[in-house]
Image 1 (cartoon, one colour):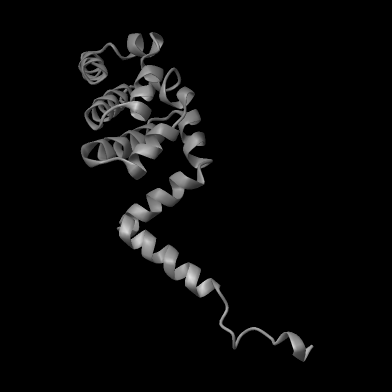
Image 2 (cartoon, rainbow, N blue to C red):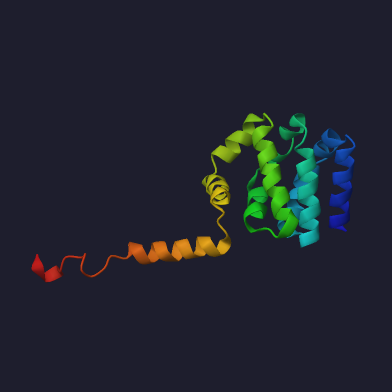
Length: 151
């Protein structure tokens, strides 16, 4: 049911009802679906939020106020099209002229790291290998460590 409601809100947003959806608490309700919905529900919710983000005056009332964490989480860990829509929505919010949305993104180390990783073409497997390699190289070799009894 939630995925149908989210998809319907996306359609209503597209026909110019963005402010009414935001004022009715639509962004907060859609954010719940981002956290708890099925993959289809998440896709419908992020599509609706992306549509809401197309109009700058709905930014201040909606996504920036609710927080960008659920969108970032979906962009990083989501599956399929939902991941792409989440990234597009973050971009739209960052470039839409809403200072609160830009400030929220700018204060998020996770957001910055994720966007940089996308430029590098990092996949989950590449990031895991980097973490593993980094962990191995951060452990000093026995030759590099002074012997305790030589002090």
